[in-house]
Length: 449
Image (cartoon, rainbow, N blue to C red):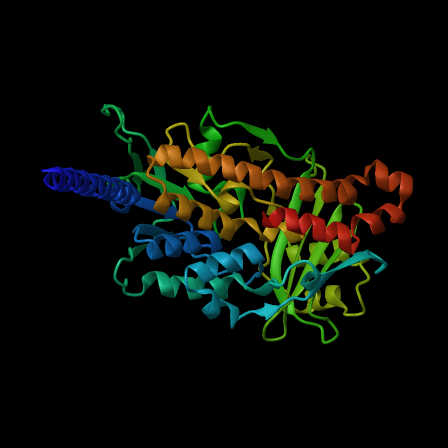
């Protein structure tokens, strides 16, 4: 009788234990299924990306790899300009399986050097000493064409698709007249491609800041929309007009595999080598806002502005005059800086140049576009939240990253454009401290976080 009781008790315990295990297993499975369903919520969303620039094609490809389809407006961005791929950008490209196809078309850059207009060295930075992943350089056109081929290739199992829209650059954005949405339902944004053609999207992303004319009149429709959105805070960037340019020239034979930053009062240059004996050159300079007239020949204007720059014996400015494109454009920086990158409706977001057109001539201005695309694609593919909630998270993330980048750029602009009290007081001794290996590495490590 006692044995029978023990067996009965054991059976009850076993049944209870098995039942608990099964319950926990089913509960876990139900939670996993719910999370899986949430993670795929954005796969059926209709997403439009305006801009076939570096950031735009990166975002389209990253979304495709994560099973999210999108439409990409081809804005004709195949610019012969240099771009530096940072360690963070390399990580994003590796995770999405396209690093090797990009890297083999680029050129490693081992270090940077900062000099005065007369060629006096203020400081240098050996990249290998603070990061095993070297930055490398290639042209924007090469980057865009390589990723665009990947975007338009036949999707593999589990991948999304990318539809390329050509000839639809001048689109308009609008909300429906009657916003009769149900509670919890994401509202749409309407995109007009012509007077008779309209389509509704769950999310519109703007990546390119300006059209091919590099003119403020052709500002990105996404940026224009945000500038007119009363709820989007903005501030004035400069008291003067800032001109800047980017192009590729023939590489002087003596130019080493480094990034060369050079500046004088109110003007700066950035140069670095590219494959095929080419050299990326970019720069910026200031003029009073009330100055009338645009230079007829931008190339000559840029040469005359920087002709007093003595470089590291490579004769870069002479090479610029001899080989820069005849149709090179001088761009004007927008006086408005967005402090938020999403619309009040929660379904429009600006990234890269559409969000911040950073002045050329700074090392840090190369870093933001691919990182924007990577962060946004990760959030859209992994978060179970609504698009508006995801954009709020992205907005906070980008504001924090831009805070670090702008702090570095603004500090350098104080040195370049204003001199700053440190420079006026300590002169080149402060500059040699600011551009020392330790200080440059510290700023670059901050940007990697």
